[in-house]
Length: 80
Image (tube, rainbow, N blue to C red; front, side, top):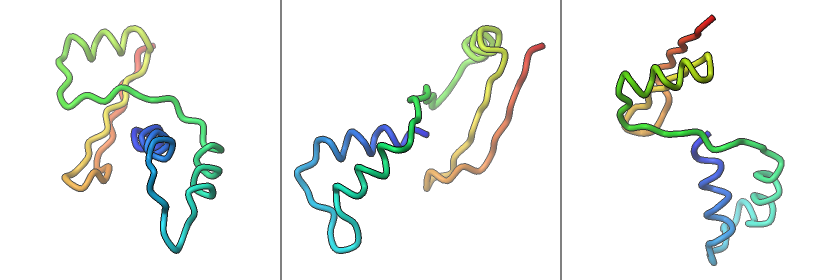
C-alpha cells in the first residue's frame, strides 16, 4: 500500500521514459485506476501509540517485511 502513492508521485515528477515493455502513459493509466489512501508506516511503534490507534479505530494491523520488502507476517488486533 505504501508503494502505490510513491509510484504515482515518481511518475508525475520523473522526466525519464519507461523503456521497451511499458510506456509512462500506460503505467499512469493503470495506477490511476487504483485508489489507495496512504497508510502510516512505522519502523518502530511503541505500545502506548499502538494502544491509542487500536482504541481509536477498533482495529490495528501490523505487517512485518523482510529485507527485500516482501510482506512476511501479519497480525491483527480488534476491540469490541
